[in-house]
View 1 (tube, rainbow, N blue to C red):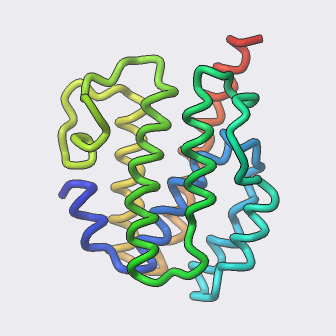
View 2: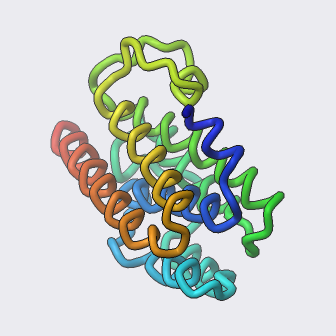
View 3: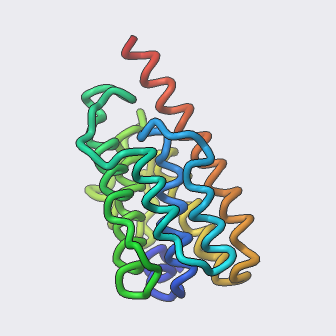
Length: 189
């Protein structure tokens, strides 16, 4: 099943986890630590309101203009996309808003990985990747696509019990992106 189909079939918790996981993997672009989004994950697990945790995360990570300081000016677009994901996160996890956010986060995260991947992705856009086209996919984009699919499958198959594994998948992706950002920063210095 394609990523687009998985998002279309996901329930509110799956959508919230999907969007949050995309944002969580991109935290290295925002200069945040690994625990900054944990309160949001906890809210998903216990079904509580996440608006307070979201505001704290925004305060900690900021939602202003991209500075390019983390990874260089040429990749400022990736940072800007991550900032928009955070800024656009809905205060409630209701279906309409959370579905739009999860879908936008999916696209943004894939685009971020495409920008940062030193290998060229031969698709004209990430939309074909989300619809199942994998030919000529760059390694970083392929890994991000797998992570997005895995998170949605975990939540669809296990509900709230799949959150812990979804967080593990996100943590792995964050480590990978942190390494990419670090490599880029060393190359700029």
